[in-house]
Amino acid sequence: MSRIVLISNGHGEDIIGAALAQELRALGYTLQAVPLVGRGGVYEEAGFAVLGPRQEMPSGGFALQSLAAIWADLKAGWVSMSLAHYRAVKEAARAAAATLVVGDVYALLVGHFMGRPPLFLMQCRSSLRAWQRQGWSRPYSALERFLMRRAVGVYPREPEGEYWLRAHGVPHACYLGNPMLDALEGVPLELKPPYLLLLPGSRSDAYESLPKMLGACRLLSDTGLTPVVAWAGLSLEGWSGGEGWRLEPTERQEGITHTLNHPDGTRVYLSQGAFRDCILGAKVAISTSGTAAEQAAGYGVPLVSFPTSGPQYTLAFAQTQKRLLGDALLLTHPRPEAIAQGVRRFLSSEELRARARAAGQAAMGVPGAARRIAQEIHRQLQPTDQGSGQCPSR
Image: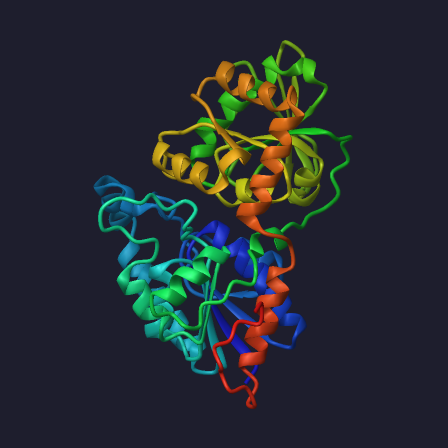
C-alpha cells in the first residue's frame, strides 16, 4: 500500500501539508487530504484528492478564543461537520499505509483515533521561541505528548522543539527543518521589484486590516516601492477596498487580478497565486497574517505588524508571533501613520534590516525541510527499517 492519509487543521497547515504531499508523491505515494478547517483549496490546486466536508466556520478555526466564537461555530454546524471529517479519515485509512498529521493536538487526536498507524506528525504550530513562560504552562500539553509517544515520527518546527520533546519522553522527535519555507509557489508577477508587500492574511481579519495597510501605502508613496497585496483567496465580492479606493479587475485569474486606485493617484496591485515572486521581490512587508508572515521572515523580509479585532491576528496572537520572530517583526499601533512609520524605520536602517534577516533565519531555518521529512517518512515505511528513533540530522 502506498496511500497516505493527510490530516491538517488550518490554512497554514494546508500549505505545509501540500508541500509535504508533493515530496511524498515524488517518492511514489498517493495522498488523500482531509482538511479539518476550511476548504483545503491548496490541496486541490496541487492535484490531491480532498475528502470530507469543505465548510468554512465563522471562527476560521479559532473557536477557542472566546465563548462567542464557539457558539457561532456550533450554530453553523461544527458537530455534524466534524463527524463527517472523522468518517472521511476512517474510511480513507482502511486502504492506507500510514497517517500524516500537520497541525496541533486536535488534528493529532483525529489522526490517532481515526487514522491508520504508523502515525507521523509535523507539529508546525507550537514554538518554544514563542512560548510565554508562566505558571504551569507547557509548550506542548501533556495530552499532546502522550499522543506523540504513539507516533513513529514527530517533526517539530525548530531545533529547540526536538531537544525539549526528547527530554520530556518523546524519543521520536526529530527536527529536520521547517517546511513553511518550501511552500512558495505561483505564477510570475509581472511587476518590477522592490515591493512593499501587504499580507492581510487568510482570515476575515483581512477585511479590517487591508484598509489600514492601504492608508499606510498612501503615506509611503515617496519610497519608490511598488505596493503589492498577496491576497489569500477570500471573497472580494461586494468589497470596495475602503473609503476612496476603487477595486478594479484586470480580467486575469492569477498574478495581478485587481488594482486598487485612490483619487490621490496611489495605486496598489492585488495579486493572487503569485506568492513566490511576492516574497522574493519584497523589501518590507506589512502583515496581519500567520504562516505568510513567517515565510516572509524566513526569506529575510522585515515585517511591520499590528493587531486586529480577530479572529486570528489579535493582540495576543501578534505578541506570540513577535516572540517567535524577534527582530524580524516590528509591532505597531493599528493606525496608518504608525504603520508607515514602522516601514520607514526598516527602510532607513541597513542595520535593522540585517538584524531582521538574521532573526528570520534563526526562527525559520533554511529551505528543503519538506523533502527531508518526506524522505524520512519513506525510510520508516520500508519493511527493513528498524525504527531506531535516531534523528538523521544527527
